[in-house]
Length: 567
Ligand code: DON
Image (cartoon, rainbow, N blue to C red; front, side, top):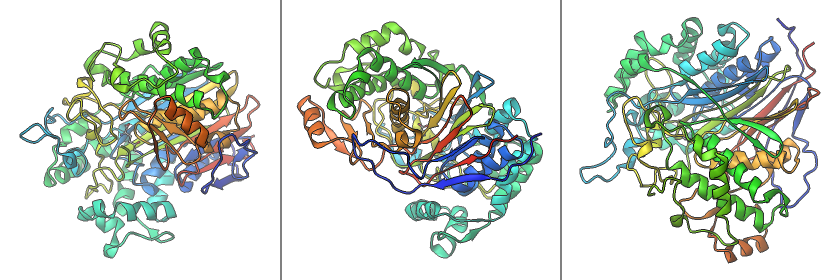
């Protein structure tokens, strides 16, 4: 085991704006070191990861410690009651772990429709009827079992300590205020987060004894502490009492699944990202594949030509997303969408003017909004191993219900299914039969945990943001691999987004100069303003072992690095 190292550099990022075309000098808030690095949505969680690195842990130990700490201090998205994906690279070998939620055994295709076949939106979003079978307890344990170095209880320890008492951050306090109405609907959630009817304020000390007890048993017994026995019974009872269908048998039957990562080449870098049941890796691969064929990198940076090609590439990859779903159920893993012949054809469809989305069909000619929260963490260790993990409850604080007797919130991931195929869901995504509800099936995701490497260099990144996850992620990736940005500058740069339907380019403030907007409109694009696209957490390592970590000024995250390298 390695000696403990004390020195840790950290940076808490605050809002920062960068104008288009501006050369971004070294950001004083960027953090750099020579050991490992963690970027996540909360300072205490990134610290938990670096604590575990300093105790001799590797990237898997640190990623799991960070994820569990997020389940305590970032409850809107960090979780035990949700699911996620992790792409890892250990000693050069890439793995992809799928711990996505599944539909409960009693789920029915029309469970969120009224008698006239119309969707009832609240049903797939609020209360435990919206919950899929949680995958995080099995997934985090599995990731550690496969790749971790420290004993399991040591990795859970920081989260237990936090659950015994932590100071509420400004971010958490404002999350609670924002979702007050949802939390107030469920007395078990209100008792924790709205004592006396008001959201816990920043700086107040909060203890979560039931969650701490769950974490202690999880440290001792692994996922069985949650998926079997008393706690599984408590989850079933809480779900039933609030109109849900989740059962103890569903919890016991849940398994995380190892998958082949999506692999592609982008501007001289190798990339590994998440395959279905996430659409993320395929959208990233299609975007890079199309842009490499259309000469995107040689167009002027921040100009209309580049924004146009990005939008056109995304219009087509989100149209193709319509075909995706749980690969184990629909018999289609999406790989033909990354075939050279298909990318040639898609790239060949780009014109000077915008194509209308209704004219863009998925490759088989199939017919054809974001709030909420997800959270991404990126980790490298001093040996150059990496974990990129995105985990979610779907909506902010999931379905709103905290399980009495377990102390954690249940997700509302069922809304990621096409409750009514062909109709937009909560994120405005129009999805197909491939993603219809069926018992035990995994709902389609957009999460894109990604690792890129070129020789000994590494870039680890991902984001929350529903359909804006792959578009935010690929823009940061392109900023680094195609344009050579420093990590923090790459994360800070303003972004744009297109997702096929609605047929519009969404534009962050300052992302496009007025003349660029005018040129895009002339080419037939509709442009709509949007406050923020994604919340990227990224780390980078040079071949010499220098590390940099960056949290996104759009969120309240924090990056922490280990310095100096463990000897
Ligand atoms: O898996 C998905 O694609 C969605 N459940 C992610 C939701 C999300 O990112 C919300 N965060 N802002």
